[in-house]
Image (cartoon, rainbow, N blue to C red; front, side, top):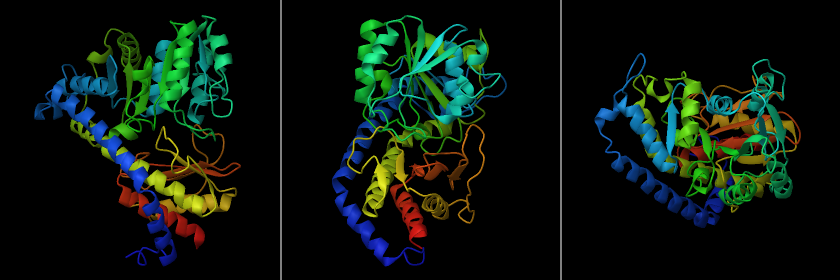
Length: 415
């Protein structure tokens, strides 16, 4: 069967060797999936989920008990006071935009303490000139870079002593940078240091790619507000779109009034029959995230054995589902991404090529044979075409499909 799929016997043998080495890592992932599944199941039972919650609304969406209960479940699972979970959010980037514009006012300052955020926020912040950016509304932006993958605690603390910082942004995942993703314990430590000198500043975490990778989420260690996408971890590969904002009740309400309208907030927003998908998505999410992590760990050790630089390494502590592979040349990078597409169930006959993408400064290649367009909880791999030519791989609805996709990608380079 491997031969029919175009996988050589030599590569099959290497995969078996790698899986044997990974038994202990896989066991850790399975144990965490069980703990997070228990958390989700408890929330479903506490909220007495029944078939009536699957029903949707149209028009204004008044009195949508399914939507309101979904938000209660997200709040409980993520240790938050309140949640805004809506399909009116186009993406995680859109949810981040809504949250930032909701909480910042002209004259305020936003401070990123992980260096520059993900590329798609450039136009939103105003790093790349845009007449609709935060900067165009006289909202200032500053950043403090990491030092060797660690927070510059001394500089951060000194800066936030000045009470003119309104919001601190922490991006948990690495984005298209080459730094490590930020673990929960590091987020907890920096929040404690910030709170020693400033109790008022809003601490917001971009939690995209991070949910259920650990036992707890950033809200549990002191973050005020947290944002993520439903076509990543918490959608479980089932939610067809949407995103969430969770955290302190007053901040969630500000975000809701920015998404809808002042005075209406969370009371409006039709669900159009999607409630069942969202509920089933978060129900499946612990297992799906575990599959994504196993795929990432398998990828890491396979590519390391083939001589490539990987981050994280297979036995490193992880904070998200993203696996990077540094190829050092554009040819191998492109071949790998194209191989991921060849190993997909959808559009496997399509060949991705580097191209200009909205929100990105470099040409980007994106491989994603996904049931939901843009879903990165499904096996996908993308990369800006710039040195040192690093692929950013994420997802895998099941480990078996993830493994097959990765083997196809490696074989495409070897061929």
